[in-house]
Length: 174
Length: 364
Image (tube, rainbow over all chains, first blue to last red; front, side):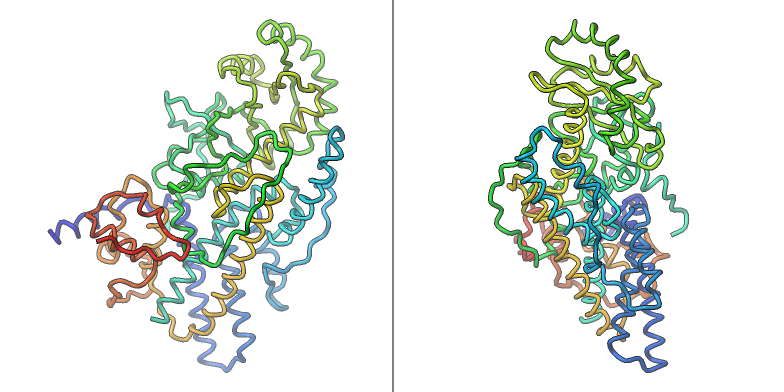
């Protein structure tokens, strides 16, 4: 019975992991992150790095792995640009990048017919859209529809990243 | 990881229509997004089919149900209380009853109403205003031509055509969905769309009694697209099934993204502290990931992955840890244990019964 179970398991795992996009992302992510972390590890053991910069380096590598693993999406390209350009400065925190007011989205709101109602809603929604723009890398250059499209993939990739990071951390703690 | 073909996996095979004779409807959006689509497809996702070569996604069907259990890891996120917000949403956010069943919405999702693909080669939906201005002039002779025919078929409806800029299509070539509020059959619409197969037109149909000038139609198309996306996002963000209203929904999304980002930062800081003893077990990580995105076709996937896993992905293990913790205390492992004890029964409801805290008690 055990053997059957084991055989079944083996057979099950021959499903094509390469076709599964989430597995793809996770695999890429891990493949980017792990070697980078190992490098950091080695550097750390060889030279003495002070704590804050070490954390920043790790964070930078985490972000890089994230951006590199999801090249299909616009936000990942933006993120990559940001990271590469800021590689000499402090690593960019994804959650706190200043945004510019995007005029396009404000033009699109309020078709002119239902102006009163739309403007109220438009104002509220605009506010939130601006918030969202700040959160999403590259959000400043997107209009509303693009943001909505990209935010979905961003969310999924963030979740996957969390899974990977959690398992890495847990594996190393336990 | 050699041999991965991005195009085949993440993109859509144009013209590779595997859906065959099965009537499928759906919506596609930009290829950027279309590539993102596999991420979000639920098992019910129906690919868009169209004459010029639709996006084929049945290829991805079996392997892409992203279950709600995946959300259970994100225990920190608490959706705020969403008070109803009366918004002007032409297609209001439908409460998705089956969301708890383990289906995450997808961005090219099949709406239950059956939204339809318009035509191939359609390009972006942006700048409707500008486009429609041009289109009205250009389309009016054409519109008049079509109108008698249209009027013969539908009395109080009008057909508008929008000419899209093929240039924009190159950036985000999209297929628009027709106005699905008109309940006319697909046949009529497709027959009409076949009349101008080479033109990049969108056929919009106005609802009864609604203004039919191009501006408002364009607006409506845009609004419906936005509401469609919001619906999909609603399925993605946990706890948003009952929220109606764009603003509240956006709030939820913002909160969720913020919490996810904070968690990632926290984890990366933690990673920095545990870094010295790094001993990453890729197999385990990937097993978890595969488990999360497992499809219905592999019911036995919910098993202890460690025994079988090494055999199939040998090239990925950077550090093989021969001593696996037999049952690490994560939600997935407990879920595995659960399924194992239940005798390999495919039980998506079990999977979906994750509490937000994530601990699934094995049911003995």
